[in-house]
Image 1 (cartoon, rainbow, N blue to C red):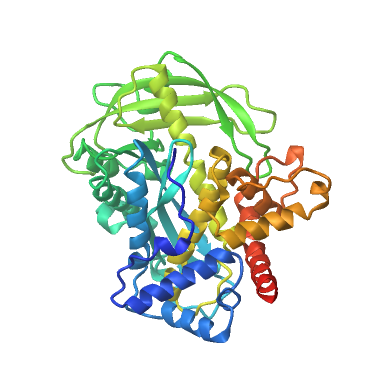
Image 2 (image 1 turned 30 degrees about the horizontal axis):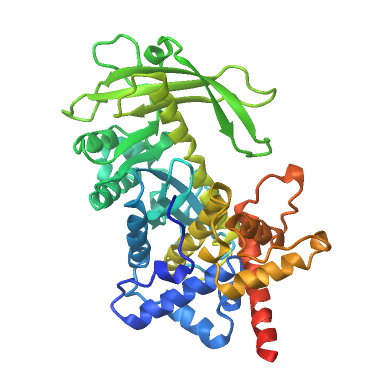
Length: 465
């Protein structure tokens, strides 16, 4: 059975080393306030003027680094990871748009054009099981691009990777290598999309063959050693090994569907790119998955995946494709962070304050997403594992008061996690009709916010009695 997120988000930060125990207590209180009401502003989440001022003082404290805020949660993530034999560390980048807050200093451009769109960039590394259950945030890099450097992209070839923004991928791998050393019984694989197709990234992974491995979608049609054809052409000439059915989530107005992909795979030796100096060639395995008959109007799926892990059978190729499908989960995570936790709506006048705020909200978004996934994967677990007694009793009372429960037999036992997740989502606007599918993280986040207010009323009513 997979480890479950703690019943209180305060436990994720209780061991934070901020140099002052009072700061740790304030961090725990902020996390609990934000988790109970993920969508609301800082004043509303804090509850009164005194708590609001304390929250702003914490976010303004220069001695508190975002990395220190996340360090305690990172430790808890490693504890959960130590009990799982295989974990996927999914890495991706997103932008945070704060253009509506013109008074905020320290922001940078987040578009490739010269439009006045300013904000921050956020690069995350999140641990997932192969089933898509998230165990926590392993690393987060947040920065603002220098406006004066706009338009210097053409100069990137003359810079070492340590001076490029793409070094974020190497940094994520280095963090994962350090954390993997603390979990010797867990096998780690870093998953990334085409932007991470960097020769230096595979080279760094090759230097630690016993450490975390890589699975990256190819972006560059590289040259091969002892081959006249390039990577893409050589892979396309491989025999079709079989087919696999892949669930494709709903996105950009397209409904969810199941795609049938033909599978090819081959071993490759990549030649070092020009201008990289004397570097060794890389021995990798490539897997190609191509959708031949997509629905009308939908762009067909075509993936080429590269990995140092051997792929000698169709089963091993399908395994890599299934791992890559988990990468969609980090896109859901970023959606929860922006829409469910409304991280872009906060008004703070300095980028440094925003970075501390984002560090806390990352853990809040993680918990919302993990609870949603666990409600689907392990619905038989008890609801008391994630909610306090007064919370789940208030939630149960609201649900049983609905018209749909009138005249029906009500369970006197402990509600299950699956029941509780459905009830929370219903509070957040999920109708629960046959065609609506399973509850999503956004309705769950709104449901947690409403449950907070309901629980306050429940406590007051019990105290009045």
